Length: 77
Image 1: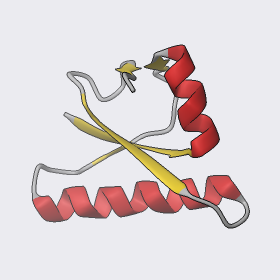
Image 2: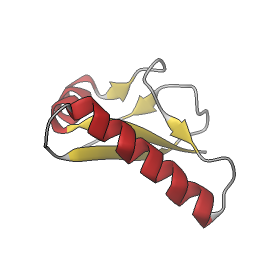
Image 3: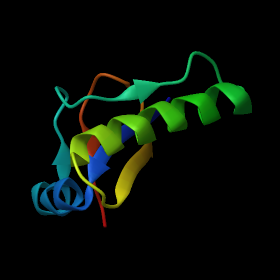
């Protein structure tokens, strides 16, 4: 299962230190495995990332293949 996690550079740095994304973190999952559905989900996550910024800056979307969409996501940077 592929999950899309909106973030910012600051959030990404914190995730690298923690080594894992907690299960409670907001995440987006495509409705199916089609390329169109995954692209739409990526755009949703990118939009959520932009709203996290609150000002101009770099959007970040972490994409991970995990066995459980609601479980923890390991972060290895």
